[in-house]
Amino acid sequence: MALFPPHIFMVGCGNMAGAMLSRWLECGLDPADVTVLRPSGRAVAPGVRVMAEWPGTMPHGAVVVLGMKPQQLGQVAPKLAPLLADNSTVVSLLAGVTMQVLRDALGGDVAMIRAMPNTPVALGQGVCALYADSGAGETARNIVVELMAPLGLVEWISDEGQFNLITALSGCGPAFVFRFIDAMASAASDLGMTPDQAQRLAMATVQGAASLAAASSVDPAQLADNVASPGGMTREGLNVMDNEGRMKALLLDTLRAARDRGEALARQASTS
Image 1 (cartoon, rainbow, N blue to C red):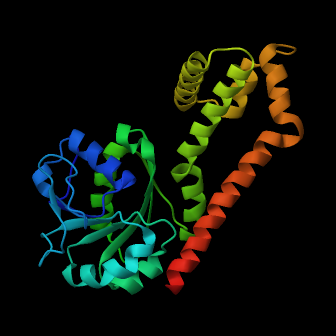
Image 2 (image 1 turned 90 degrees about the vertical axis):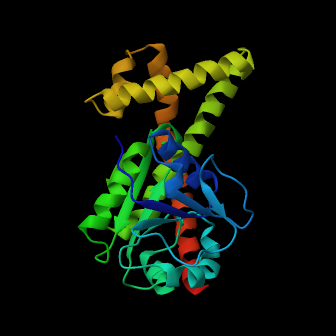
């Protein structure tokens, strides 16, 4: 049974925050224990209170999830900061917004934790990377770990400087995998397979291979070699991928570009 805080106050409820909320509700979170602030006032889920305006007080022991756009922090902070109490915990999903920027905006005495989930959290198969500085004590850390546990793998990082790289890998990673699946299916289609069958086979292949890799004690590089018999079909295909490190080079460029964009966003946030 998942353990949830007394109240979750969500500032914004876009795709990521919405996926997290859906999973929490599936795992037993009482909708009455959630408040969502969104200017449109649109409903998010049955029983969840939605507010278009800021409340006068924050529920005791609330976990505040910042799920709006990073560039909106400057508008949100003046309204949110006066509502935060010593027993509040702030969880920021804001890509590129450092802990120092958060503390400058919201005050230095509140427990704050940065989180980077990815979209498979909706199925409980996501990744949630967490970072906290000394301002977040053991109690706040445990609360957030319990909150994130139903979403998938929870990983703490000790160096905030690595946060944008982890975001590039796990936060952006599902989109890169989706592109890979589409490319595999498109290639099979170009070689003569019907597009719908190619897509079904590509998706099932990636899903099965990922599950096998996750369950294996052997690293993925060795798993690939184990499948590839000398002179066989798999080895011939791997030779194309491995030629001059083309696959690794492509992914290195991909992750570097995503990471660098996160760092650029952080610089923008710090000067806004």
